[in-house]
Length: 234
Image (cartoon, rainbow, N blue to C red; front, side, top):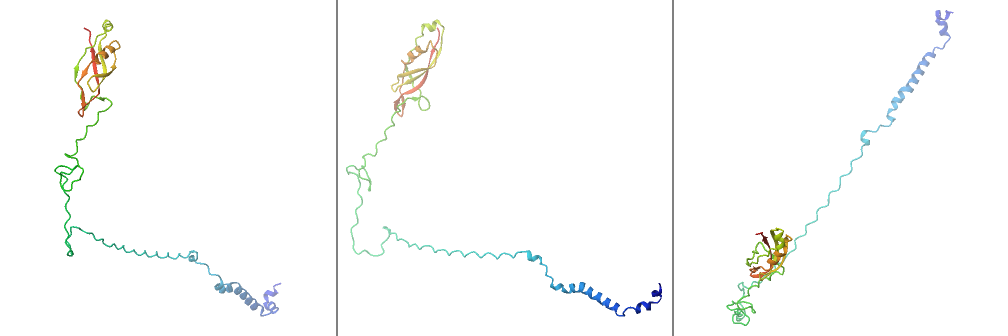
């Protein structure tokens, strides 16, 4: 059983002497084929793209703006010669002509102005324009106040106290709005503050009153004013 161990020559003698080296060489070649050859072929592998490959190329710069159009030259304006009649003549006249007569005064001319000056217009009014006519008086009565002064009463008529009002012991003040014509007489009257038993007596008295005419621009005009009639028991 232990014969092969104690006598190795017997085991080795049964194998070929070149079997072990060939096995080693074969293993080395296989190792080289598996590991070394792929490392040597690294230059064949594709090159990985760099980061700049994902960056787009910058756009081209915009074209320069067109040059501004050339300014048009200002139009040439030829000066217009102005003839000055008062300018001194440059050349001597070829002949002498009489001067034109000046415009005569309109004084003495029919329709002219007395004491007119040379150059006056023919057809003026002797003595100048007349004064402007005063404005026409207003058609409607104006209310007393402001520039319209209160007229003065020239005729006063006392009211007749009604017997029924005396019996009822009624007294007080009746206020009336009176329209006074241009001649100073009362044309219309109406009650503003009423006392029923005294209104008609107050109206009858006021309609008999007379006032001084009221002037507006020097012209008599009708006016409206407020008057009072006082009734007092005796």
